[in-house]
Image (cartoon, rainbow, N blue to C red; front, top):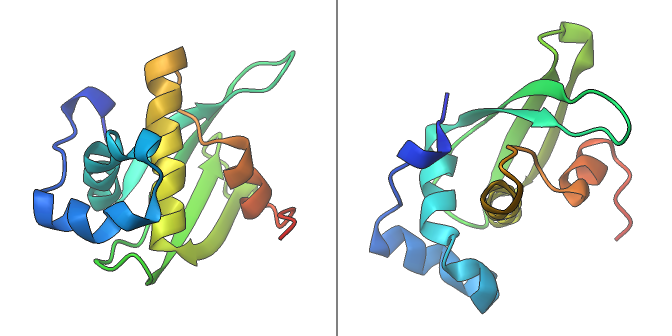
Length: 126
């Protein structure tokens, strides 16, 4: 599983393909987010307000193009009945990985942003 400090940033060519999808404030984190994306899995903790964090393992299918679809699976607390999956465009999933890395830099916790969980649970309002 990925240890965030040891992730190798993606190369310039790959970053250039994805860069147009993100605002300037996220482009600095993009190379490392793509490096994490290439690993295909991460362990983290979902922070629950007023409760104990719930550990999770996230894994996803890796492909090359921003417009291709990826399928991400999250399993909470190593329990098969607490397993969820979502399919979304790579550029959107990498955006969630950028938010995860920015959150880790800010809070020291490996967790996806709230919008990712809304998408995962089918609560997204488009």
